[in-house]
Length: 160
Image (cartoon, rainbow, N blue to C red; front, side, top):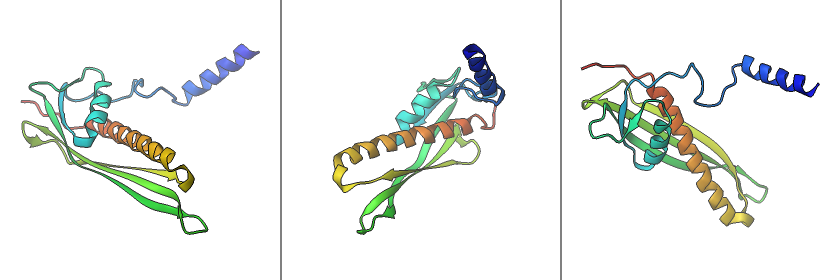
């Protein structure tokens, strides 16, 4: 009976379109093979996500495309207050804007991504919350990089 239940769950997951990230046959291939990233604070996240793409080389001497981060801003604002007027929750916002260039000519419009996260806050756990906030910012940069790379797959292809 357990085997049938496991089989039914697996069949249900596959029939609804579930797949591990990056393993779908429907993922669009990257239009260019070699990339160079001029990324500032987004450099590492973009490199990691781009390197996970099949048939993509990052940091080549003569790249097909240069990806430049126009801006990457982090903002933290109070989202909720407790009864004493202190902050109990923050809204963390990451705004990233990038532009892809081929032979110093822009490919399409700039790509803009916004990632938001809420973070509970307590004055009693200041050091732990600082570490948590650092981890959340890192995860937000990874999220933004994944969204950017998904959009890069649909850049116009310009042949020489």
